[in-house]
Image (tube, rainbow, N blue to C red; front, side, top):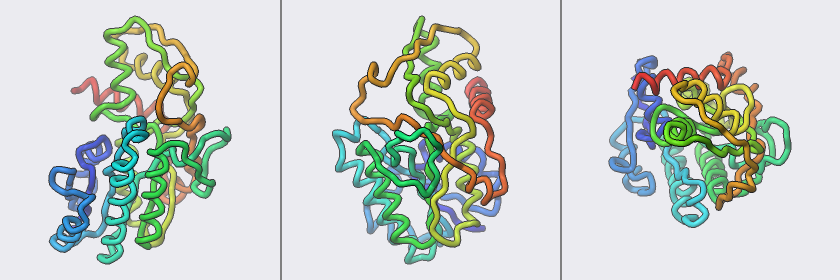
Length: 286
């Protein structure tokens, strides 16, 4: 059985992976978070690698507070960039594979065409810049690295857009939701499965894109989530980004070209509405 370290295991992606881990008996997943492995501590990482024979690292840990990052740039840099550099170097020393989860925020999102992995990056926020540096650090320092960029992540775990919209719909008569930001939601369980399946395909550095298929606005996404929840239908008003001020600039168009990802694993990525139905079913079961 091959040992796979999972950083950030208490987040949405790590929690989703735990639910499907039994489908991959060839791996022994070692789940860690900031309480039992400080990825910012180089010596602690070295000791962990020396004590555990690791085949791969699923690097899910990240600083993801997009607006707060504008004020905490040094902390975002430390977690997203510097810690990723440490992990990449240690992976290279131990000949371990590395999967680094990145984001649509590495693009400015001004062109209305799906982003391919080869497209030029130009992040507009501190979060996007630090994640891009994390990408570069992993790719430059470990020859067995897959960067997976994703967008609009949600799940039945932790705080996220879907759960927030459903919760608000229970107490509000109407909601204002942005309609001029376009993208593709990503169900964390789908991304977790993809992240595991790419492990055996890592034989050189590569960037891949993964989100669910289909395109929508945040407004469309909110309407569908509340509709599928079904308990109470409320008025949802479409608003412009300019009507909802935020400290960090978001990409206006966050749609990925995922053809390389589908071809590599010979898979068909589910449509976002189908995966959202699965998530809502899980939430109701809770």
